[in-house]
Image (tube, rainbow, N blue to C red):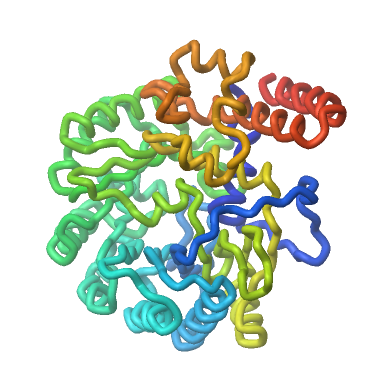
Length: 463
């Protein structure tokens, strides 16, 4: 369905990260929808913690994330500010327990191990870090990154996520990566030695010139050496990137949709045969080695975002609030540090989530999981109306069920095996249905006019 990704992407982006090109002042920007009907999410005294390290040595040709290539980095200043913002937001949330920590970026393996240790120490001083809690570090598989793995583990890291992306050296060059296939293989080996059973590898498909056969061969080679967790990501063109310009000029060609669909289907089959259970659209685990931190996102649990451009979702109890807020930290590292030094944190945007916005996030993120959304989980966010009330009505959503792409039964709402691959194209229909139901509950007269506008918008997206 043409345009479906753009139609629902605002919800996903609001959930996980902020565009590197967007800086928003909360004092001047209202919520995109009426927030007069707010909802109190299930109260919890625990949250996950995401820490963003914004620096890289170079920008990959496909990347438009919030990252910076500085001439130099003041590690001591970054360390102090990360600690200070962590302390401030922990106190604001009043959570007593941190369930997991994820150091992402950027390239967080460029940080000093002392910075990792300092942030974890700050967490322990202001909340309980669960015994055996998952503490993940994203790693760029260069010789420099590999040389510090032991020090990171000693600092408190117990899970490593390695950005392999490809085992083809020419493809790595085209992608602008600064490692080789041999670097990746050596890093995986060292990581498995240090964190056995807790190493994840990221690999990308749909790369320029890639075929289904070459992809299958590469994946089989990778599975011979990797640990118990694999994340698959389709390469997508982002406007403004070097790769986008190369494709636009005709210098490179990406595989068509039919080819990438076949690549995804083939990968799912290969991974299943090798004992990896798919538990989310892009993630596969063996022996139960799932990413607990990411499961928290998909289950709409609270998380605190620290660092330049980080996102968070939590209830700021110490400020007297009882609604979950969508929070975004200042993007640029220098500005972020200045604000943290002055105010203790650099929250640039802070918006209470109304009922519709919260349920949108529960829906969009929950359907990414193979298990989907259970009735019990939905009830925590919508006590008065169950999944059948929202998605059991005659119409387009029921048609998805009749086509065998979506399942609504006693377990809850989830995608079928075939439907999971088409989730992006189904989300617009589901979101329209959700918004229609919420509007009808609020004001039936208003709902009729807004529903007409929504259908017209959806028709335009499909064209």
